Image 1: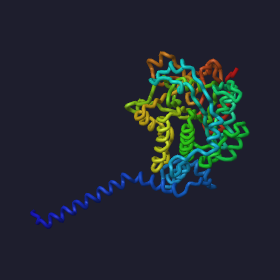
Image 2: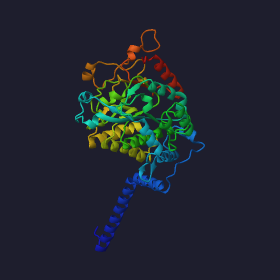
Image 3: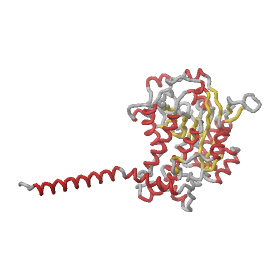
Length: 431
């Protein structure tokens, strides 16, 4: 069939118009996530004051995020947006800055400890002198069940600061509890915090929606905890402090700070399961994320240097973008993904803490044990946990001696965690 020039021109115009519609439709679909983020940013620019707590917030926080319904996504976005302003992550409050300054631990590490590290960077004078702060976050239920044991264990461990006091002499000995900042989700939680003697190191964050009850695993409230947590880490790093962030379902047995700093690393985290770990092995810059272990970010370390600050900011930003379509977002999953990319782009180091030193109740019984030879020949392989002695209901003190701390993420809700924590704390000999 032959077409006249006029008909051919009409067909060309129709084809061009159809292609234009397809291109515009594809562009609209591809930019949908970006447009949603921009819309949220415009809302933040229009209104920056803190959000109030709704009467039914407790019930909503404890709901499971099944089905990713529109209402669930909308509520998750609103909780995430609490931690952002028109300029990005919200600035630290004056109270937060004061708390970080009050908690700062001045630490001077022996050069020999750095030389033991396999980190390729040389240990200069600034690397050996570190300013460290411990951080945690809690709501009312944590203060009723896990916080008392958590704080008691920290108070049992003494540390010597490298700083100089007003008289020009070496600073007096303190405890790990003296270097802890707790971000509290309510004024009542802050009041309980101050009763434990933390004073100005108890900081209220009205944007942290944790409610007053225990949050079930992967409930809406549980999934939104990460936004507050990463914000605190970012703000403390920006104040020039190394950050060791701790969940409050932890019992500390020995001073773990020298161990962490002696690795001379940029970032570090605990491990989810009992596996053979070489804590000097750098997981940063890998070619495949499959080579990274399953981290548990209940214990994490971040060094206050530019590349780490950038990695943490991207961690927070990635979560803020993803919550547009995934309210089940989990900071632990996103940590692994973002750090894989960030360490490749910035050359940052990322290490796993020894499962022989940082124990977990998820390992069950009496910890994760393996030989130094296993580190060479069985790196990354799962290991059996140490069995209880016959007829015993608790681990023998000599079995616990290598442990620096123990984490209780697999022990149920807060009341059960508190009971398990107390059992291990009373078993440990601090003398």
